Length: 280
Image (cartoon, rainbow, N blue to C red; front, side, top):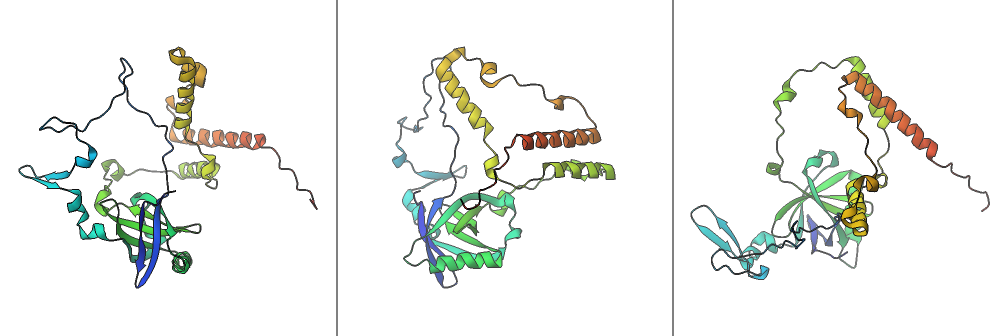
C-alpha cells in the first residue's frame, strides 16, 4: 500500500506521528463506453467554451459563480487556506462508541506509526480499547475539512470519515404516522423467521454475484462473440413465488419453513470433520 497523507494525531500535548492509507478498494470490473454503431471508444474532453481549445488538467483552475460574478480560485489560492496547511489530526473529544450513528460513516483509512517509537501509538490504541471510546477528530485531506471517528481495528488505529450533520437527510414519510395493529401471532411468527435466519456474521460467506456474473458474461462473449446464448451461459431462471399475493401470516409461515429446509439441506451437504489424531 502507498501512503496518501502524513501527519500526526494530536490529543492534549501528545502527538502520534502517522501515515494514512486507504483501507478499502473497489473490486468492480472496469468498463468504458463505446459507440453502439461501430464500437468506437467514447472519450470526454475538457474543452474551453471561449477559445474552443482542449485544455490539459494542469491548466485548469476552479471558479465560483454567484449568478452575476465569477471568482477564479487557483491551486495556490486553495493551498493558502490555513486548514489545508495543517498536518494534524486533532482529537476533539472521546465519545462512547455506540453513540456514532452508522449512517454517518463514510471512507475508511488505516493509520501506520510514523516514528521510531510506537509507544504513543500503542498507548492511544489500548486506551480506546479499554475505555470503549471512539475519538472524534478533525483534519484536512484533499482540499476538504474532515470530521472522522478514530477507532481500533485489530492492532491498527484507523479513521473513518463522517458525514456532516447537514449531509444526512431526514426521513419524513407520512405513511409511517398511520396506526397499524400487529397481532401477537404475527409477532411470534416474525420472531421465528428472524430466529431461522440467525447466524454469526462472516464476510467470507458472501460474494458479489453481479461482478461474478459480469465476468462470466465477458468471458463467454470473448469465446463465443455475438453467438452467445445467455440461457445456456447462466441457466434458465425460474419464476419467483413472490408474484403470488399472500397474506402476511402465510408469507411468514412459508418463509420460516423454506429457510429451515434450506439450512437443513446445507448442513447435510457439509462433510463431517475428521477427529484429530492423538500424538500426531
